[in-house]
Image (cartoon, rainbow, N blue to C red):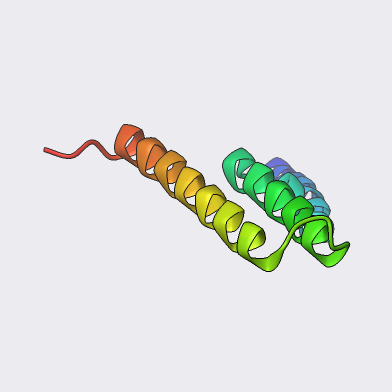
Length: 84
């Protein structure tokens, strides 16, 4: 009987935790590199839409952001999965 109650308790707790993460999935996994990249990209796009920069400037700065983000991801991946 104790085993059944213990199993029920564990399932109830696990269910409650998983529901919390399903309601707020950003709390489960957050990539700081992507979050920073997305914020910078959104800021850059906002500047273009507000006509603070030209389309050519927007494209150049966007290309630079993409290159920086790609480099950061490659560095991170090389640390996680080292190449032989």
